[in-house]
Length: 163
Image (cartoon, rainbow, N blue to C red):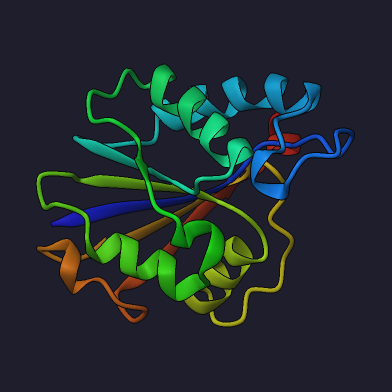
C-alpha cells in the first residue's frame, strides 16, 4: 500500500528576541504563511494522518496550524530527535509510525530537511525554504519497512510558488 511522507520545514521564525533557539516563535510572515500552506496540505493527505514535530516552538507552532486545518484527531507527537538528531532520526521516526496511519508529516528544520531530501533525491542540493512541504511516497505494507531505497520523491510545494 502506498504510504505518504511529508517533511515540512517550520514557518518563518523570529530572531528579534534574545530567546533560546528552542523557544523562538513564528514571526509575522510565518504566521501568515502557515495557514496558506496548511490549506494546501489538507488536499494532499490521504487517510489517517500522524503529525510529528520537533520540540522547537517554531516547528510545533507550524505543526499546530496544519493539524488544526486538517482537523486531525490524533494528537501531535513531539520527537526530540527532529531537533537534536539528523536525517537518520527522521527516517527512524517514520519507521515507528503505527500502521493505522496512511500519511505521516514531520515538522522540522534545516539542514535536516534538506539532508533528508538529499538522501532521497540522490544528492538534492536545492534550498528548502521556510514552510515548504516536501512530498515523498513509499510503496511498503508497514511503516517499519521504510528505508532510503523505498522512499521516492513526489513533489515539493514552496510558499513563494503559491503567491
